[in-house]
Image (cartoon, rainbow, N blue to C red; front, top):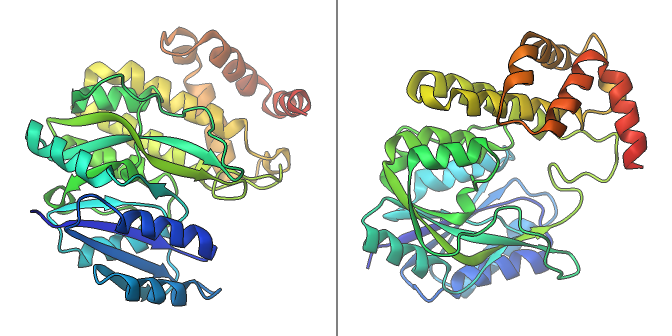
Amino acid sequence: MDLVTIIIPIYNIEREYLERCVRSVCGQTYSNLEIILVDDGSTDGTGAVCDELAKEDGRIVVFHKENGGSSSARNLGIDNANGKYLGFVDSDDYIDSDYVELMLNAIKKYNVPMAQISRDEIDISGNRRPDVCIPPKEVMVVTNLWQIEELLMHRGDCSFCTRLTDVSLFDGLRFPEGKLNEDFFLLMQMLEKIPEYVILPNQSYHVFYRIGSNSRRADSEDFSRVFIDIVDNADYAEKLIGGSYPNLAPVAKRFALYQRLDYMLHIPISQMKKDNIFYRNVVGYLRKNFGRMLFNSRLTVKNKIYLILLTVAPVCTRKIHKAIRL
């Protein structure tokens, strides 16, 4: 039985959610686990809860570190993992008891280095939200080229929390630190190593959706850096596609434009100023690629209308969009 390491980055999480998360991992039908809890400099006693949970199950190992963000916590876990396969669970999410077994069996059956399981989202009241990523109807063995196109079309799931990955795929690769949407960046790099992998329809990973975490902000003046990072990721993807997958160039351009549309529709109006260099560069990119925007068949008509308006009159369009949403 291969050892499977599950890494959980943790920072200032409420006790009930952390206990639910860790115990869902401990309760797996596949028992040969190493469970690494990485306390990322918590300031509210969460670290002590991690130590308590470790006393309940000998498979749990706890590391305490200075705060450095989720990526640095995950990377510390990778550096100290002993498993043949690695999985990741966020500290306020939880998994079904068959999460590991289903993916490991699929890896063995189809002789692939990675398996992906499906997910759902549960809100704070326990209600299931609409699926962000639509699960396949049956098991799928997919190529890396197929998955890249799905990611660039916003149909694929880039989360490493829904994956079990052969540890060898992390050779020379780690999560980018100080970034959000870090899973996309790492997965795009890793897919170059993977000819194919398997996707399962089972929704065994449960995302706990709460307003206030990362991109889920309640205050309209809050602007998560995730909207900056998705633009940076789009630039990386466009460069990668141009060098390795030229047939996907129109899809990569659509992705680059769409990510900037997302940025423009979320940036607070108060930050849309000439001294905001990143904002100015986004507008400049839209103007430079105006023709490609108009003739890109992968963009919807609605996408194009918004992009045109945000290119010609960004502040005015943003004000109108905000008024309509209110």
